[in-house]
Length: 253
Image 1 (tube, rainbow, N blue to C red):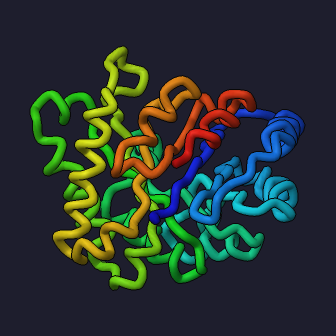
Image 2: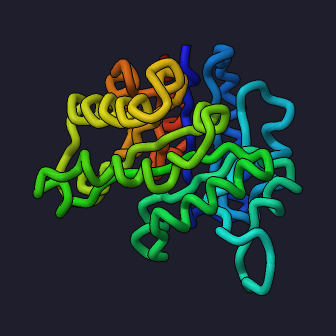
């Protein structure tokens, strides 16, 4: 069975003390995860060591970085490299989140560099893809997200692609007043898996977890995660509320 993952993305929220309490509350729920299930906490850089310390005695709970720079090292004031993240004992990193693409102009070529640096330093990328409202309304979303995968991932050998995690973000349904249905989520996840299969074959494509990143909440997680090609969620706002994220973790299949 594919990995089933509940990934929290705190973004630029919470003080150190608030983050520590949130982790304590979630871990205090003592949710027993199956061997194929795990939870990630993608936290701001200053909280990585604290988060790693909180989860290191827990089974199937891990700290993750929200980003890394696309260069190995050098005069890039304020940036954080994959090597630095690995040196902290962090083994997961979000790459290409829609906010990074929109606000920081990260393109597919830059993200390919990030993916390579992550793998070079034994970090599993959580690679994000997804289309805007404009793309969705023109009906070209499949072509658009396929290009995101092909341009940033299809240079990878088979042994690397099967270790990646993909997260689909329907940017058009986040904060726009429009809602993505469960059927739309499954449809796109199935399509993304078929894109991977077109290059690497169905056996490998069936091993790649694909997470849904479109406003996953406590009251819709179970329905979303029940879709055959939805392998968990990349969760923003609901991951900042312990009771909500606990229910989302419990919803993993």
